[in-house]
Amino acid sequence: MEPILRTDRLRVEYPPSRRGDPPKVAVKDLSLEVRQGEVFGFLGPNGAGKTTTMSVLLGFLAPTAGEAYLFGVNVRNPIARQRIGYLPELTYYYRFLTAEEILRFYARLFGLNGVEAERRIDRLLKLVELEHARNRQLKHYSKGMQQRVGLAQALINDPDLLILDEPTSGLDPLGRMKVREIIQRLKQEGKTVFFSSHELGEVETVCDRVAIVHQGELKVVGRVDELVRTHQANLEQVFLKIIGYPTCLAA
Ligand SMILES: Nc1ncnc2c1ncn2[C@@H]1O[C@H](COP(=O)(O)OP(=O)(O)OP(=O)(O)O)[C@@H](O)[C@H]1O
Ligand SMILES: [Mg+2]
Image 1 (cartoon, helix red, strand yellow):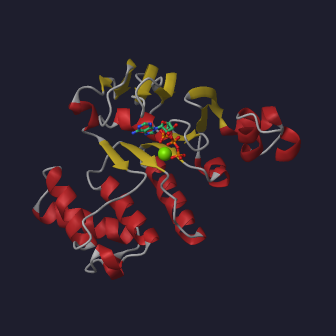
Image 2 (cartoon, rainbow, N blue to C red; image 1 turned 90 degrees about the vertical axis):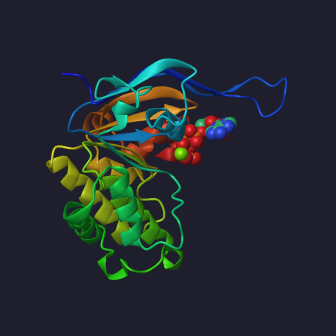
């Protein structure tokens, strides 16, 4: 069966900030496969290349070399993105719109109008627990509330694949738990979730498989339970070991 998400020796170089400097290689020949129905954690320290990889999948950046595919369609073709939902690392929504208006705007982008759009908006505001604030302008929202609007926005088109760039960043422990529950519910509905996170404890609880990237290179990919068993350590310790942090300190 064709993987839902696949990268094949993907390489991304950013132009140098100063003339004469070499280009910055953000992603180095990354080959990765995410299968239907998986919750897949894309892990790596700051600057590892996670957001850059997602930007290629989203069509924001063209790869320097290699290819990427969603649902078997090359990401150079916008059709590849028809069935995905995306939560960016930083959300910049129009501050003077309410949550309801933002979601209506995104619904329209997907051609959803009328009763069907309103039904989805109601359901999603309930899911992310923002019903009480639905008519408040976003400028009055806390960071965590804005993050939850972002998650609702990512789900508006009922996508089959969710690409979430640090979905729990800025959320309090309760908010993080709710996001975990949403991810688990999406999995039960047969959706595929590909997300980045620095919260390794929660990654360990929700992910089927993870990939750890470091300086643009894939260091390890595997089932969470197998990695934990093989290394006889929790995921955070495995992560620190793989990125070369002294294990005596990591233990
Ligand atoms: N627009 C850009 N121009 C030049 N270099 C960039 C640009 N965006 C990212 N980089 C560099 O590419 C590398 C990968 O960055 P990226 O944002 O993909 O990392 P990340 O894994 O998402 O990190 P974080 O966990 O901090 O979000 C970093 O070294 C970064 O400095
Ligand atoms: Mg990032």
